[in-house]
Amino acid sequence: MTKIKCKHCNDIIESKYSGQFVQCSCGKIYIDETKYYCRVGGNEEDWEIVKEDSNVSNNDKNEV
Image 1 (spheres, rainbow, N blue to C red):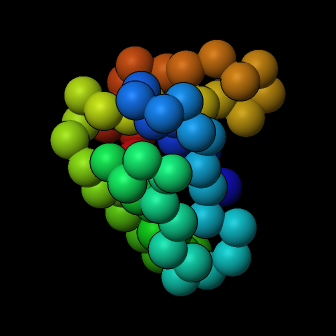
Image 2 (image 1 turned 90 degrees about the horizontal axis):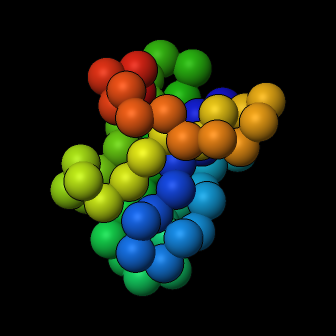
């Protein structure tokens, strides 16, 4: 599962089951993930990928 962090409210969000739409508390970003796709919404500069193993952000947004 992909986790993303909102740079405004610092929420870390993830879609925990297929088709679950999850939005951060400030409403600037969202994620919707299935086994076929991962959709992230919001301005690209408003979010960053959070690595699963170390909770360190990854600036390469092309992985989503």
